[in-house]
Structures are given as C-alpha cells and as structure tokens.
Length: 332
Image (cartoon, rainbow, N blue to C red; front, side, top):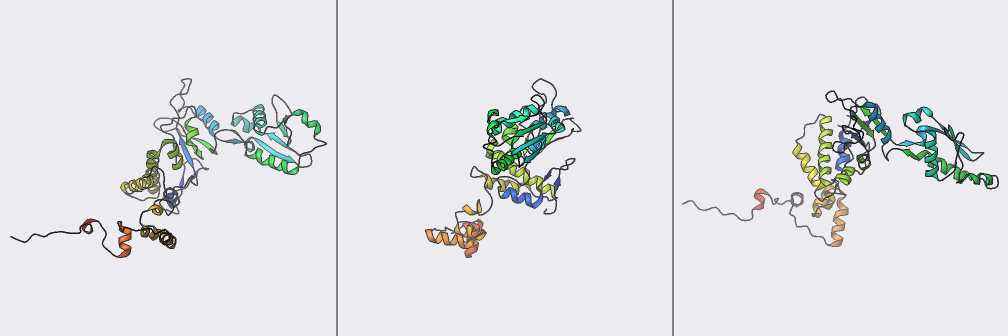
C-alpha cells in the first residue's frame, strides 16, 4: 500500500494520495488532505435550455470559471526598484484561455488593491503600472517629493502575486475529462477542493459532485454524509491497493469516528484519547501522561472494558465472563 500511487488517466498533473498514507489521513481526520480533489458533474442543460454536460466547449468554459486565476497566470510581473513601481505585461494568449480582457484585469486590480493602475491603452491595455501608495491619478505629482519605500514595493509585489482575479478559492486547477463512452458526458476533475462554493456555481450538478475532503463534506452536508464518505474513501483506497477487506470493518470504523456528531480521529487526540477507562487510554499512547493525570485528579477506573481487564489479568466481562453466579441442577 505504501508504494502504490493512484493516477488519474489522461491527467498528468493530478496525483492523489493513496495507499497507507491515505488511510492514515482518513483515520486521523485531517482537516485538509494532502491532495484535495473534486469530481464535478454538470446539469443536463444550461440556463438557456441547451445541452451542457455533453458540450465540451461549454464544460471547458465552466472549468475556466471555476479555476483560480491569479495575476501570475495572465501577466509577467517586473519590479523596477529604482523607479519604485511594478510593471505587469499582460499575456493575451492566457487572457483568451481565461476568458478575460486587459480592461477587466485593470479594473479588478484597482478595486482589490485600492490603488491607481496606469495603462498604456484604456480600451485594450497590454501593460499596467502600479505604484505603492498611489490611490488616485492626482497623487502622481507628489511622487518626486514623497517616493514609496522599498519595503512597500516588496509588500505590494507579494500581494499582487497572490491576488485572485477570477475563479473559486482553493480550486488550483480544473481539467475537463471525458466523454463517457455510454452517455457522452464530460466532467471536471480539479486540484483543490471547495464543495460549498462549487455547489453554488451555475450548471453544477450538486447531487453527483464529489470531493475527497471529508471535513468539507461534514461542514456542507452533515455527519451522515461524512460517515458515508469515510466508508467510500477507505473502500476505494483498499481496492486500489488490491486488498479485500470486509465492508463491515469499515462500517464500524466510520461509526466510531462519527458517533459523537463530528468527525473524530482514531488516536490519542480523538476516540482513543477520550475513553472512560484510564488503563485503556494509557495502553494506546503516552502511558505515563495518562496515568499521572489520572492520579493527580483522583480518577477511578471501573474496569468494564476489554483492554483494562486484560491489563490487570482478570476475566473480561463478556460472554462467560459476564456471569457472576450460575446454578447446575442435580440429576433426578
């Protein structure tokens, strides 16, 4: 399991954690998986009544709208240290792919940074210039007497690089997959996950869209959906590693992890660390810590479980061990 890695067919850039690392992620209830990904299915028709899921061009447009577009995706960023300004050279080919225009980029930069953005052409700009601290065109006249600092220039550069101009948060990449041999439909595979925002996007089929981020499923759909996701993810991972595990074992794990109404890890910070028995907790991890804490607060162990009875060497209170008194009648 450790050596196996699942790979999406036809997508050379989407690798999903599988095998033992993925099992550990699930049972540890990690807030964010190492490689979050989504499979986004689309409605049969769009708002205009035209076929959507079988139209590759329309699906690609939705994928472009979902994918996060940063400034670095559509422009080359150059920092002029001597003149204390930043030059953005827009890439027209990338703008066409992202369905954006230079004027739109200028407007979004201006609103997001709250700064004045100079352009070589107002209608179809190819080069944009941004100066730290200059919010209005009138302030350009005072630059000679009050130039921006080097620190402000570097801070502005970092802000521009990370700025999201288009798309949904956390959706780093969206690739169109398909068509399906039987239905002819396309779907979108992503790097990154944002179930709540994607589900609100026009044209997305919420009933079939899926993410491997169990925490997002819990937050958006509830604990029962998270329980089913734990089962599905573990079963898929084990099958991918060629292991045949009875689904009842996975059902039990999922039930234990979600029995309190939230997704808990199976470890000392979750299920095992909240057991009522002191000896059962100490048998798992950090033995001295559990025993010391129990001794300080005067905790009492009733020895009702399996682990604690085995530790002290007495019969477990199950099966024949659950009977304190029995009677054998004499033969008549």
